[in-house]
Structures are given as structure tokens and as C-alpha cells.
Length: 123
Image 1 (cartoon, rainbow, N blue to C red):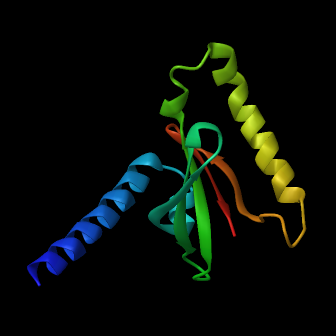
Image 2: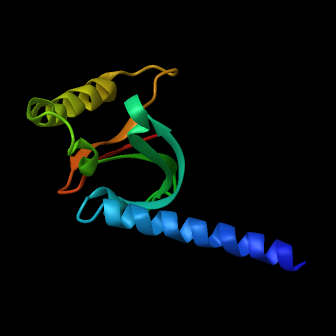
């Protein structure tokens, strides 16, 4: 029975740590005001640089996914790449926002940039 309690405690601690990690990654980002972000559910992109978190929209209680790219991952990139990357991100998310098809991911909230990260929200 103690083993089961230890496992439950460990899982609860991990969930709390992931939520704290999101709050640290998104300080001042408008997405935190509109969504309650939960645990990380996936990673995506080249080098798995995007972290994908489950979330709930505060106003409608709709389940969504919040995509986060932390800028500290760009520290070792060439200066040219660091400078052009935000524009590439904005253009890509903007194009995805305009696409309407039942088999294409729908963007719920456009790309938001804060001092520490880029984030956007999908269905």
C-alpha cells in the first residue's frame, strides 16, 4: 500500500513541477491569462524543440494544446538564424491559421512572443 502512495505522490509532484515549468516559461505571455496550462503531453519539431502542453480555455472550458518554444534553445545558433527565426515562426503560424480543413490542425490563438518564449494554441 505504501508503494502505491509513493507512486501517487511522485506523479502528483511531477504534474506540479511541469505546471511550475510552464509558468516560468510563459511569464508575461498573454496565453497564461486565457488558458490554464496542464502537463506536457508531447514534443515536436526539429530536435523536439517545441513542448506541447494540455490546456483549458478559461472562458469556455474547451480543451486545447499550448505549444511553447523557449528562446534559450537558440543561444547556440548562428546570429543570422536567431534573427530570422521569429519571422519564419510568425509566417508559419499565420499560414496555418488561414488553412481551414477538417484534417488540418486549427490554431485557436495566434503566436505570442514574450521575453523568454514563443507560444501559440491549437485545438
